[in-house]
Structures are given as structure tokens and as C-alpha cells.
Image (cartoon, rainbow, N blue to C red):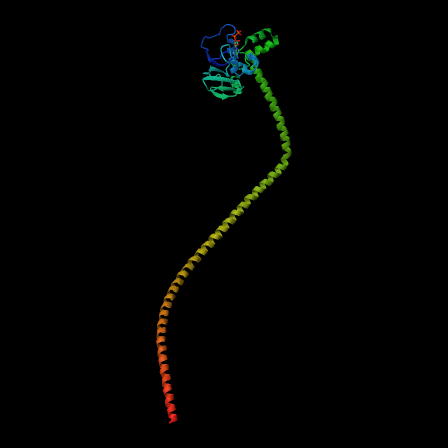
Length: 314
Ligand code: ATP
């Protein structure tokens, strides 16, 4: 892993975008007092996730934004990007170049990015955790810190050396592991409590389980019977249907036969009606004949009576 480039825009004295390329062989940045050398190291600490405004020589985090000068107005945001070469995958990400970026706005909003993807502060802290570059590591020692080291008591100095030697990392890990162990023990206790509580519920649960099993068995049996009943009903319906179909066919042929008979009878009826008409006509003739004969008979009787009368009177 190599430090390749630092870009600052609006950070402290760097009002304009400034980029520093850490080319091979570069070992120091020199400049007159107040020219902004410490601001460079602070920019690195800040982009790596520094949360203390005080350690960046400010009252609050917004103080890192360029506050204006005699010739320039203040600006509204600060941005720092740190570019690291990661060909050896020293940092645990699958990129050969890692760019971490931090932005802050005057309204208090802030953003963290890893390779232009928004992320959380925690992601950046995690990324550098074991790299020796983290915000708590001794890879960046400010002027004040050197004084602190020189003037500190031996036991305090020990912790500083431990930190620098990377022992602190393991101490922290040990502490974390101990905390985790404690948490696990707590969890274990809780699990045991739960276990105890569950043991009490075991008997009623077993009873409920056997009732549930029995219910399932009965349900299965019921289903079997229902299926059997349905099959039986279906069979008898099919048989009835077959019977009805046969009846229908039989009735159909009877119907055809009856229709034929009706047609025949209708034809007979028609012939008979014609006969009746003929007979009616004959009858009419006979009636008029009868009438004529009756009239003649009456006439003859009248004549006979007349003859008989004449005979009497003679
Ligand atoms: P020294 O060697 O004295 O420590 P230095 O080169 O490290 O100096 P820095 O302390 O990094 O310089 O820079 C200090 C300069 O940055 C000052 O001129 C200060 O006014 C300017 N500065 C710090 N914060 C801001 C800010 N928020 N806005 C504008 N300028 C700022």
C-alpha cells in the first residue's frame, strides 16, 4: 500500500482545490510558519475519520471549512480525498486504487465515500482498522504530540510506544474479545434462563403436540373417508347417468314410433274426413230426395183422402 495523492478543496487554508502527489522519494513538505503544513496532516487525519474538532485545532467540526481571508470570502464546504495504491490488497477491498473522501457542509451535513460510493464513517474506520493508518494510530504524530511524548511519565510513554509498535491494536482486540466473551456469557445466562422457562413449558407443549398429532391423524382419516365417499357418489351418479341415457334412447325410439303412428293416424283421419264429406254430400242428396218423396207422399195422401171423401159423399 502506498500513499499516492492528497486532494483538498475548501479545507482550512486550502480554499482552492489543491492536490499533492506523493511521488517516490518525497520525504518532507517544508514551508514557512503558518503556510499550512499542519493543515495537510490534519486533512489526512480528517479524511481517515477524525471525530475530535479539538485535535484538529478547532472548536467544532465546521471550523475545518475555509473561513475566508482578507482577499477571499468564506466557502460553504470542505472536501478531502486520499488516494492510496492498493496493488498488494493491503487494504481489505478488491480495488488496486482506493480513494477515500470526506465532505462537510456549513449546515452540518457530512458525507463519506469510498471510491465515489457513499458509505458510513464506520466503513472507513473498518477499512483502515488493521492498516496502521487509522485515526488512533501513531502513523501521524502532530507537533503537540511530540511535546506530549517527551514530557510524559514513563507509564504514559509506555502506552504511546505500545500504540506506535502496534501492540495497542492487539490490546484493543483483546479488550474487544473480552467484551465479546462477557456479552456471550450474558447471552449464555439469558439462554439458560430461557431454557429453564422452556423446560417448564415442555410438559404442556408435549400434550399439545400429541393432541395436534392426533388431530392431524384424524384429519387424514377424515380426508380418506371423504375421498372414498366422493368416489362412491361419483360412481353411482355415473351409473344413474348411464341408466338415464339408455332410458332416454329407448323413449326416443318409442317417440319416433309414436310420431310415425300419429302421422299415419292423421293421414287416416284426413281420408276419413274426405269420406265423411262425400257421405255428407250423399246424405244431402238423399235428404232432398226424401223431402221430395215426402212432399209427393203428402200430395198422394191428399189426393187419396180427396178420393176417399169423394167416395163417401157419392
Ligand atoms: P506552523 O509551522 O506554524 O505550525 P503550518 O505551516 O503548519 O504552521 P498550519 O498551522 O497548518 O501552518 O496553517 C495555519 C494557517 O491556516 C493559518 O494561516 C490559519 O489562518 C489557516 N487556517 C486554519 N484554519 C483555517 C480556516 N478554517 N480557514 C482559513 N484559514 C485557516
